Image (cartoon, rainbow, N blue to C red; front, side, top):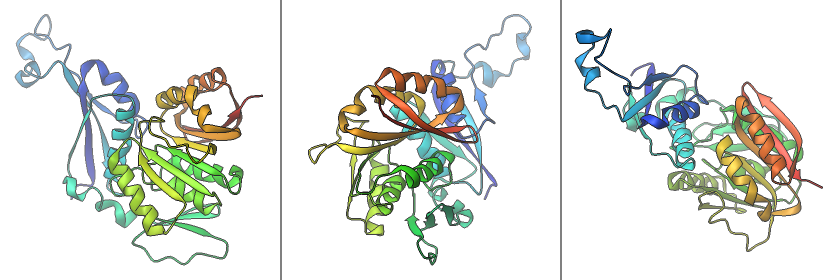
Length: 305
């Protein structure tokens, strides 16, 4: 088995810059294949490789290399969810590992992850919690969310400090369901977990059922389009997505929150932070606290005034 897996995203040439921006959230060592400017004029002449000359000029690809100790499935799902949320048509492919191995090869490296009072434990591993320690058994399969990524860790630590007991929680872009499970362990009375990806929702349901949590429901929703609020508004919202989608979400999410409701927005790469802050202010929210790990930010906000 290869030590590295090449994960490529193919899309329209005009979208390559945005594709690269999304993929840079996972790794800055990107390889970009863009043949739109290939020409036989001038200096190139007959020296240019014929395969390049005949390459598709309307499409290109951006690739990164995933080490063996990381989950290619999680990387791919992270990208798939974010491209889908941005309305982009992107095809993912791999070299160096069979697709059926995606969700298995990295498991030997996945160990319990202590995050304050909550520890994320691989579903297949024996683990005895210490007194007062809550555990989340997680098998992400083909969904994003193991607790290894900075964005997930930031939200989980934030929740331990700011989630009110008995809160009704809305989890947008739930992935594996890890944040809803965390909120449930921390005393939430009810959690509604939504994702645009049906595969992620299936995985989240499986993790919730395996945990035995009876206060979490999972459903498919494109942002807020199918969110159920018949049982009441939400006291707390978590959205671990991406800056562009958070900006799209902010004009409407307040209608789903109680007057004193709070929200954690995460998945924000630091160069995009000012854009998110501007959208927060423009849509009637104020920043309570920001936390950062490496180049990633999570921001706690509340309704202003």
